Image 1 (spheres, chains in turn blue, brown):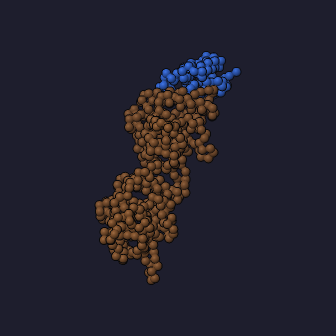
Image 2: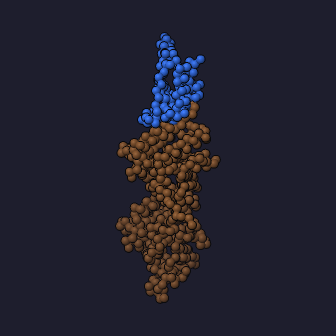
Image 3: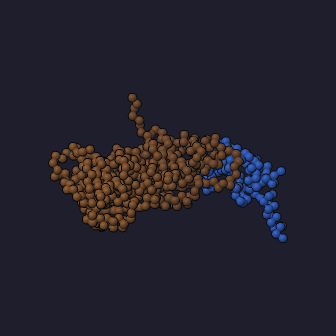
Length: 108
Length: 487
């Protein structure tokens, strides 16, 4: 009986769920550029554009860095869907990022 | 000829004793490194540096990589430092820079985020000091020496560019290559302080050593320290010899007979050793001095490692020396402790605190032979050297008793510190046929003439008595100048 009830939200998450990704960068450095490019291509290829990318420049917005305890940059936070996940680095290791974002199953 | 070295600007740490070792403090606007094993006091050192600065109006940022901000505040409070109040007053900021450990690493990254956070707080409170506690925890995230180095360089440059006086603390582990896992940090920092927590003869002791200090001289020894109720206390012994007060005027030993042998009495501000085997009357002799001094309105601090205050008073009462009036008038303070009860460094702090509070004219330590039980010969030696150093700096007369079984002069001086001892008095038993008698001999007395004879004495119910009619020096002929005295 509960099967159907559980299946629906899960299916929603996998296919129709919207992703909110917050990317923390420091200025316009090489790693920041790389991280943003990697994230955009991931969004396009693995989420079919079902995502919003929010970028935060910690150099300009130190309060935001304090709020999310951003010690290293670039840093990506998966804000939604829950649970929250943090990935550090320029996101160049795609399989690792997909696994972290719980997307490796929906891949291919 | 070399020009006179221009002293580099320094920031006093105000940590007891540390500024003497650092010849003024930490290098201003530069990076210092504090390294040591777990529990060596790195965090306390950093915290104390910040707190003392903040309390004096110099704000600072504390970055903790390991402990929570809450834990840091609690630790500080146990030393009497109210961080929350300092934070409220805008004199301090605590940055909890802890990675949760479940972050996923993917690709290259750097610590710009951290620098932004620290920089933001520093600007907000106009901080001049930064302490980064347990930096090794952050470095672990890299797991790569090359990247560690580049990030450390970035951190160092960032701190230096902003003119922040900073202390980075790093945990090092014993064995292996003694902290060389952070060799690069040693090289990068302008001042490197190593803290060591070791066990000597079953007693934990702490030692601090300055490894390097660019552009400045520093005390090069290992200095013992304790983490007391009010932070770190160090015992530099850098200039002790130079600041000793000269020997003062004669003070009566409290015994006319002994005064006669000493050509008038002890020199004040001198260090007198009374040596003899158990039962020869060392404590009695010291107590007679204490009683006489208290009657002259001079204050005596009596450190007893042999017996309790009650036992000592009762014992002296049976020898005709009543110390109770001196205690009542607060001219005498008896501080007793089991040598084993704590480490020698803690014994030293306890004695120094009593000296600061009571401000004695004279100090009696009964007996130095018991000090070995504080841990080891070395611990006892350090304790005595440092205690006597302070005593001499303050011009306090010091009487040490030593339970030495008959032997050479070396043994008589106790554990090898005869150079600081100005006068030596030996007590011994002699077999006098039907009975055992006692004899007293002045072996040396710096800056004073003295008798070279062994004199018999008795301990009676009325005190110490000398049967030979020893005349005081004023009554003796041809003894006007003490320099002519026997040596």
